[in-house]
Structure formats: C-alpha cells, structure tokens
Amino acid sequence: MNISVKFFRSYQLYQGRSAIDIQLLVHEGFIEIAELDLVLECSLGSFVVNGQDTGQKKLSCSTDGIGEISVSIVGSEIGGDGQLTVSLQENGRQIGVQPYHLNATAFYTLNFDFIHVIDDYAMADGMQSNKVQATLTGTGSGVNLANRKLDLSVTGSASFEQDCIVQTTSIHTDASGNVSFELYNTNKNGETVTLTGFLDVSKTAHATQQIHFQPNLDCEDFPPADGKYIRTIFTYAINNQQYLLRQSKCNHLVTVYQLVAGGKQSGQTSTGQKWVNFYDLMFPFVLGKEQYIFGLAKNFINTSKNTYNSYWIIAKLDEKGHKEVIDSGYWDSDYDVGFAYKTGGGQFIYLHSKGKDNKGKFPYIIREILPNGKMGTIIEQGGWDNFYGATFFFSMEGKEYIYIHTSDNRAVFTYELNENGKIGNLAYSNTWAYYYYPQFPYSIGNTYYYAGQRFYDNYWFVSYLYNEGVPDRINEHDDLWSRSYQYMVPFSIDGHQYFLRQDQSKDHWFITEILADTSMGSDTDGRL
Figure 1 (cartoon, rainbow, N blue to C red):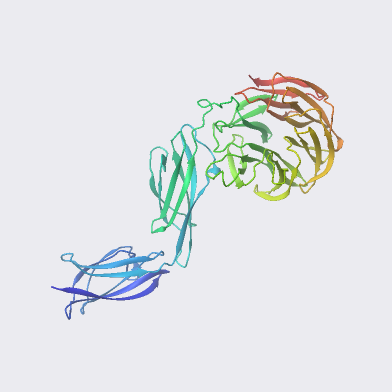
Figure 2 (cartoon, rainbow, N blue to C red):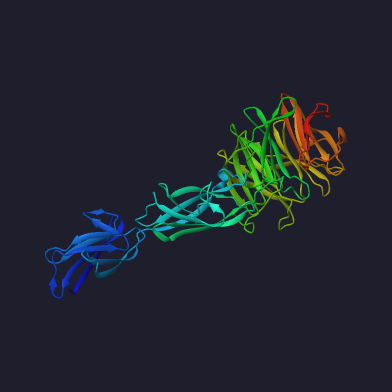
C-alpha cells in the first residue's frame, strides 16, 4: 500500500498567538482513503480541538468519507519553526511530514538584579547568600508575563537550597514578570559563580550574571596583619533609648549595645549579623520618627571596581542593627568624611574627599535627603584648597554651622549653613598651633563646647564654641592620655554628657563624663 498525504496550509491568530490550519488529503494513487485512523504529532505548539487549546502535541483522528481531515495548531507567543508528522495508527508507519512556521507575537528579555541589599548580610557561620531578582519583560501583542516558567542553573559551590547542593531549578514569575530567589554558598574562600536563566519556551530570552561570594570573614582566624581593627562607630536613639553601633572592617560584623544611665555600655542587642559591605563612612539621621543611616563603601561586591569608586545606601535602622535599605547606588567618586544635618526644614548630607579632583581641589558635595528616605538632588558641590579631616556639624542659637580643620597648614574655619542646605557666610577663620583629630561638639545646658585630641602626642583638649559659631582658640582644659584614640563619639543621658573614646586595638575603649567647667570627669565604663 503506497499511501501519501497532500497538505494545504492557511494561517490565523488564536487568542493573540500565531496559529496554522492544515488540511490533509490522504490518498493511494488517485484514490482518496476514507475512515483511515491516523496519529498526528506537532513539534511546535499544540493542537486546537473544538476551539480549545489542548496543550497536547499528539492527536489521534480519522479521515472523513472523502479522505480529508483538518487540524489547527497554535504556537506560543515566541513563534518558531515546526513540523507536522502523520503516521498510521495500526503500525506507526510515517506517511507524511509538513514543515510550518509560526510568527512571534511577543519578544522577551530576562534580566537579573541583585537585591541582597534588602538584607545585606555577609557569610556567617560558614554560609553566605545573595538575593537575586529575575525580571521578565516583553513587547508585542502576545506578551504574557504572569506565571512564566524560568529554568535556572548556577556553577561553583553555589546552590539554590541552603542545606544541600541544588544547582538547577525552575521558578515561576508573578503577575508582573518578577520573581526573587536566594543563592547560597559554602565556599569559605569565596568565589565568583555564573548564574544562567532561560524562559522555558524561548532560549533567546536568557540572562547570564556573574555573582561574587566573598570569603568567610573572621577576625579571630584572620586578624588584621597590622593589628589595627578599623571600625565605624556612632550612636543613635530609638524611643528615647540610646544605642552604640560598631562595624568592624575585618569581618563586617555589626554590634549594637544599649547606652544607659551612668554612662554605661549595657546589654548587646545585635544578633551577630555581618553586612555584605564594610561602610568606611557611616552616620545616622532621623526622618520623622524613624532612624536612618547613610553608608558609603569604598570596596564592595557584585559590581566592578573599575566602573565605580563607591557604593552608597540609605537605610532604616532598628535597635538590633538590622537595616532596611531604602535607596542605594554607585558613584564615580568616594568620600572620607561627612555628616547629616537639618536646616530650613530640610534634611541634607555633607561629604568631603581627601582625593584631589582634576582642578587640584579637594571636592565636597551636599545632597538633599527626601522625606521618603530617597537620595535627592545635589544642592551644592565645590572644592576646598585642603582636605579637612577634622570636620563636624553643630547647631546653636537657631543657626547651623560646619567646622573644618586641616593638617596641611592647621587652618580652621566655621561657616554658617543656609536654610537651603548650602554653605553660607564665613563665621570664623584662624590657624591653630597644632592639628587636632578627632574632634566633636557637644552642649551642656545652654553652653556649647568642642573637644578633641592631638593624635600624634595624645594630648586632649576641651574648649568653648562662642556666639555666632566662633570656636575658642584657647584650650580651656588639656592633659595627656596614655594613648591616641581614633574614635570619639559624644552622647548624653539624663542631662549628663559623655563620650566614648576607642583606639584601633582589638577592644580598648572608655566612656568618660565631661563636666560643665570643661574638665574631664571620671571614666564611667571601659574595657582594656
């Protein structure tokens, strides 16, 4: 029996997708074969029966009384090339093949974005993770982003599961084409792995991303080679409770302690979290009733250092040192000193760099922080003739000021800060006999002070801040400490003024009360 098939094609749209109607005429020689049982298979798309997409690629059917049969095949929105194969039911013998093409009605793109900064925790207890968001977008009349299957794979020691190695998986998008997932890694030495993803129906809609897992950071196993434990330290308050936050560079560990009456460092509230980045510059501010931080990292992961020089965040901060990142980004510049301040009802940050710009100046920048915690526009940018490492903000008599002091020629300036956030009129200028670093302002009652240390010979001082933002040029009190302290952080509790001083050894710090007569009181707490 020499059976053959003639094919007749026509194209249409089915629910926004490309479809093809194929009419088959089965014959032997010049004779049509009626009531012949057949099996049809389509390599692309699925059969439509009684107006419904069956989702099936195989269909059993029979020719009519004149040897004809008509079938419809609908493709996915991405289209492509396929073929219809016709076989006899009784023995499976193939009697005809018809190629066809279905046009695409949608074009998709898949991207990976890192969202680890929502939690921003580094490797702890031998486990590190990166949160990733997959985003599917598309154009065309047939676009459908909801509940789409994405096939994922990852290399190296990375895994989609925390407790076992799983390096391939499938996930489904939400109604907007987004889905987030977490990648885990147990390689304590750190590594860069490759994440690959495909839309299951379209290998052209794919994404590949390099993901860096940093080494397991441990100050005990890998102490700093120079013995210096670099930290970021500041105080903040939530519900009238004072907290002291430290972040260590050697392991990125964040520790938070309560500061209580009597100038004591009390119970630890943090839970041992390590942030992905160490923030070289970090300071707190308040929006409404919520506590925020600005952080700037000079060394960061998952983006090439050749592309950007710093990574910044604005985040809400709780009493345990957990943060919720509200805004973040990358800058071509990095900065070394800065602070947050309010003036004229607005919230601003001032940043200053010790690296010269192309004009030979040391740049500074002022940016607004929006009420929703997002980074606002640049209010002012310029350059100083020197790098002013000793810099602080102070407010007195309804006005705001910036104090700057440089080691280059020991010059000191104070400027008023305008209500629009910009640097205003010069309030004071002079040259000190020595360079004092670090320095900080404080007030007791209606009297304003500033204090600091000559870092190179350990002498400390306390002086007044006079009306109109004028710093006292006389050290009202000074004396010698046994060592230098890189960090000095003021705070007040129950009307008493204190400050923490800490050096760069493993754990050497004191809390000391400062008295209203500019003298140092007793040490109230400390650790050697």
